[in-house]
Length: 195
Image (tube, rainbow, N blue to C red; front, side):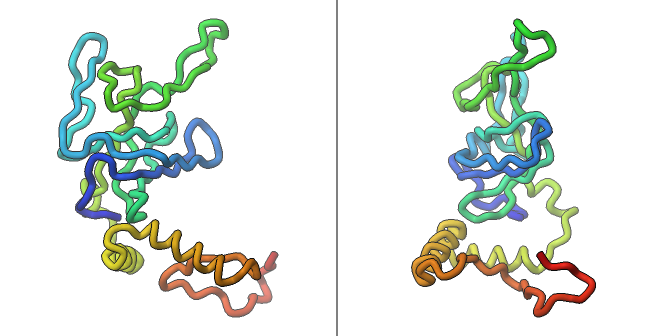
């Protein structure tokens, strides 16, 4: 995790992983931070309402839905968690021809929208807020060190490594990127069925 949200700013590329609206899994990328260091206010039925408090949250244009709350939000450059999705604008619009049903999703979220219900964006709690309650693990230090070596662009570096491996292997076997500190089982245990 990015414990201090160092480097988090507008246009930071993002990805969220979650289980919204009862679906098994949704990865939503192609998104970024809209505002990370400013308070954001929206119009809610004629009243101005603080939508984002810069001290503990940031605004994104993630394509998320009801049920995505609690999902980790990753920085696509560093692969570190920047936040936790906590709130967002309306996701669905009621279908007037079919009471009890929804028909339209409000996407994309637009940084220029000032009225709630018109795509004002998705709100994430900065991971720096709960960071003190999250125990640090060795892998976290490894990721931070890998990011330092990659100058904050770990994901592009990993993709280049993957492409190089594919080219080097000439299709002989699937390419993988090794997970630091992971040792695969050396031989199957008799009590485990390997498929």
